[in-house]
Image 1 (cartoon, rainbow, N blue to C red):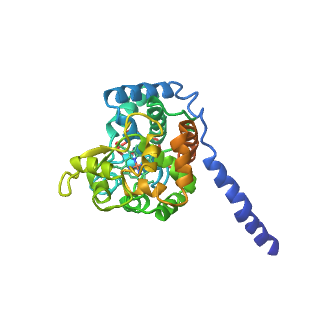
Image 2 (cartoon, rainbow, N blue to C red):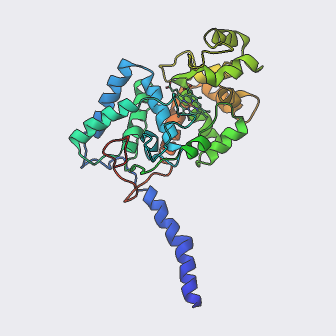
Image 3 (cartoon, helix red, strand yellow):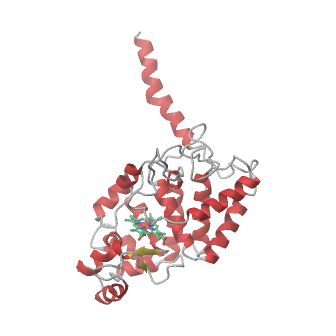
Length: 318
Ligand code: HEM
């Protein structure tokens, strides 16, 4: 009896964690090398077309991937449409009238299905597309490990609870990322994703009208298109080069020109000031560290093996 319970304890303590570790470790760069060898080229070409049509699309796809990974892992749950019986992530507060780029993923999926039927997950397509968008706008490349499978469910509540708020303070941001296994350093470098793209006025209005740690000239400029009342969907760029993957975002933070409250929290006399200063002076360090942090973010809780499914249409469970 004693030896049976010893056996069970050893199984639970050592053997089960070993296998659960290696289910995640199944992601690999050449996962589709035999089953869909043209996948990387198809995604890259489609992203090149999409970004040449609209530079912002690289930003939108990058954000889509971040919002996918932060809500129960990189499992394409954000791509699921709501149905009569199912309320997903698309209409959660951080995504509603804000997350964009779904049509680009649909286009890629259609082409990939035509070439490699029922083989490639939507989660992997999104991971590749996010990387390609960054590279197209000047970022450093990284290797995307593949083999994620797609979720069969999505949770609006989880999206509301797990995605960081633009009104959050530094401690909350750090703990939001810690909940996903990411460090404060990862958080600061991944926030550099805001070197691309735009924000709606509703997300930064309180900052430009009420906060004091803001460059007054910058606040005046932003107020021109973000009135105290109304104009909530008007857009402003996060930095002066929203279609270039550079370190202007960090230079803006040092100059107290962070657009969101959460952006300026990274340079407001706290633990991340030194790193922000480093990146503001060293674009190569930023793009290198961003690539490494994206590899970490891309590995959050993937579904692998026989979990989940390979969706035929990224918007619908099979
Ligand atoms: C640190 C916590 C973060 C907060 C609070 C935050 C919040 C926001 C908000 C409020 C917007 C504007 C949305 C809108 O107005 O429609 C936005 C846009 C964006 N975010 Fe973040 N974000 C965070 C981290 C990240 C990370 C880690 C990435 C990528 C690695 C990222 C990438 C982007 C991009 C690229 C855009 C522009 C999207 C576009 O132009 O379509 N963000 N974010």
